[in-house]
Image (cartoon, rainbow, N blue to C red; front, side):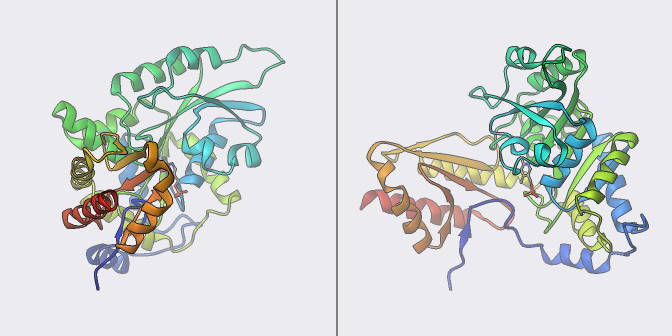
Length: 348
Ligand SMILES: *Cc1c(COP(=O)(O)O)cnc(C)c1O
């Protein structure tokens, strides 16, 4: 049987044999009592790695962002965020539903950034008419795009100067760090930390490119994390023998960060393989996510193309804009199969 090449998301990875062994071997306690040694070790590891006082292990990135926004903001506050940001668009409006915190979404520029002028203009004066602007939330990578580091510094300095807190949805922070390190000839952990240190809180997913089955961490000051801890409990995220999951995340931090460069190379290989097909516009990938736009006549064929791919054991998502995500469980042969199937579709 030929295996399926699953390019829908980097969340689909299976824990490796070595990761499963680490999970089995993990010493466990009860994390609601605060005595699961594997959870505590993970929280200390990620906080130290990114240069924060404390961290909190949570079941999902969505809950991590919710804990962050509700820790920074009170009812009637607002956060400035991108239209395409996960913590605005893809989380069921949780900050508004659970926290009565209002988003102030802004349009992105082509490189994924929010313009400094737009941010500044969106900050409300202290006036009873307005919600209190409390927080700037950025995302890096955003749709696979690395935010330019000088932009991250400028935007977060602007927010700080205006008295706002700063949150980073760094679900794919380590993809950003690998790409940034490659760009400037630095090392990944240094760049992860440099990006993270521009913010008051950072959320990182272990269940994306890092290849763990479950989990995210929110990092911040001890005080912020103690507020987030209360919100995690309210949101139903207090887990008991969670050390089995934390051990997988710890293993991922030790073994799966640098290898993200392979995923980026595979996205590049896919982009090169698809170059020159009429009707397709391939966006140059910066990390592990490749977007392909169907143009002209091809646009009508998008459903047929996805079906053709599925028939050939290739899974992807999208409609006129297809998304391919590379990860731990995809190799060059799988990418080449995807290229061949797409080329075949456009030949016939
Ligand atoms: C996946 C993702 C999340 C949320 O993660 P879940 O664990 O699926 O809730 C948050 N932000 C970004 C940028 C993501 O890609």
